Image 1 (tube, helix red, strand yellow):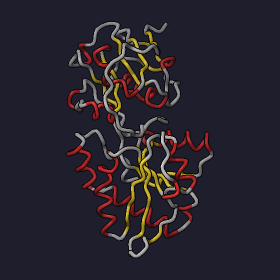
Image 2 (image 1 turned 135 degrees about the horizontal axis):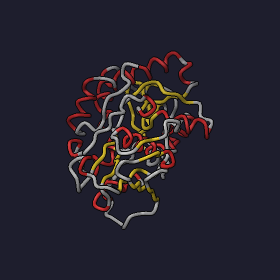
Image 3 (image 1 turned 45 degrees about the vertical axis):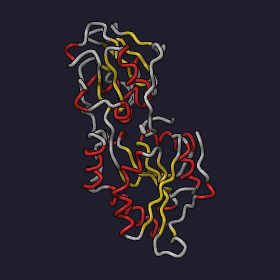
Image 4 (image 1 turned 30 degrees about the vertical axis):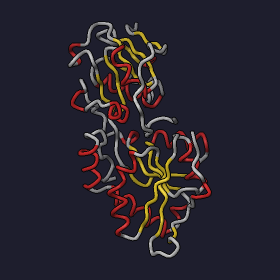
Length: 297
């Protein structure tokens, strides 16, 4: 019999951190629309200039920092990479599929496949960017060993991040998941827990501010970063960074990839991103919360 408990009841209200939008990606469909009249799906030359423009859909200003080295390199090669900001996670794929933008970069493969299945989008990955780890943090304990019996651990309440968080807890030895569980397990897939761990499912963006109210929490890197948590403060670091399903990606319309000129231009965008200067931004500006993965795929 399972010796754990879980609840989706909210904790007492805590102060929210200012959050930027990502993927978890980045991770789940998180609203305003951009002006589609300003967007085109063509890789075309700007009027009066020899540069061509490629419009890249992103979700949050932080992406502009991450993509700046690529933008600079592409400019030297005659390509104007124009950022098109979206304030939610559902619009960028719709805009891409409709031809309002040329590429987007905000999601991982699980989310993309879910969107394609539910919306019928004809878009596909053309390259990978990074992965954001899910680490375990605590404001009360300095190690996993210090966690008490009946410890309350908070995880994201969405299926993708929640399932990944449970895998991190399993990997850390705090719970044991059913070996027959789906790729994204749920709390029902927990077979046992040595410390009688209690799982609380909370909105991913509230987890950092909920730390005083729980014993530990599995927090997505983008929210940890925005809240001021440092990777070295984690009491356990995510070890499952080699799973391609969680790598964030650059997506394009399948139809555009049939055009040799567009395909070549998009491949140049991928190559411009996958360079040491981008990793310098990951490490120097964002404390290693973004980790290059899939660059050799």
